[in-house]
Length: 366
Image (cartoon, rainbow, N blue to C red; front, side):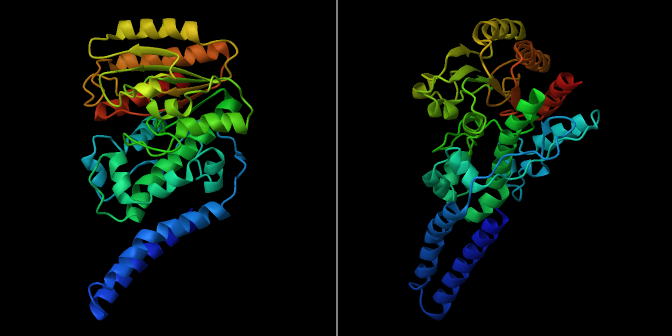
């Protein structure tokens, strides 16, 4: 990946220099040759990268003391551009520090998985090519950054998300070993194998499911998505897959309102500002008791906190105490059924969410 990034920057800067030099020493029209090269070189390096990259074995040589997955590069810092988006792109570091104040045990630091591994797990080559271009990335992250070089966005934004996606896959491995794991990022539930959206680029939930199927030969996997938004990305990937059982509680009045993806959901409940903590926990407990079967082999828990009161995008009213009770209930059900569980942080768009996440995780692991 480091070589890819170096070549990416090399060709970007080189093509810009060529365009400038041709414009100065030949004529204005000649600089278009450099611009053309700037637009075409992603095709070349993507083709070579896909061709040369190989699938890797996903192994953990040094098992951590506690199955918490975190890397400081999860946090997105792109010269201040990230501050123009409502998402708190550094909440992962703050949650980690909050946990470390009370838990000193060694966590797991993930490495970037190879391109060959992502392709083996189902990623679309065409989609990976499209996200080389800032104009397309702008539509996914909902920020007008189309004027920036694609390599800049990949280096300072996409690579962080790709590392977090790798962390989710490693988290599945850890959960199988330890019974549970928590990735302090991930949960990009609007992304599918061939498209993104809603600030979700890489489909880590789908990739985790495919990892469990292809590497671990699991047959029955459950996704419990309690983010305020519908998890339409992975739902589209598993529309006709009976081996994936989807439980999704969300506010159906807000983004993305994907009617096609809804067909993949086995258990749905609408929540909004009128849903109290008591109602929410009661409904969740009942539905988990009914829908979690003894033969289910793995749970992916998308634990978005944008259902908290005051969140600008979730439009719900669950308290921080309600978040703790929710997470405790999901983990309790998983442990009772002896089903390995992987928790992903997903959405949460206000500073107050960070403290609630940290407190909830601490109650789960202490």
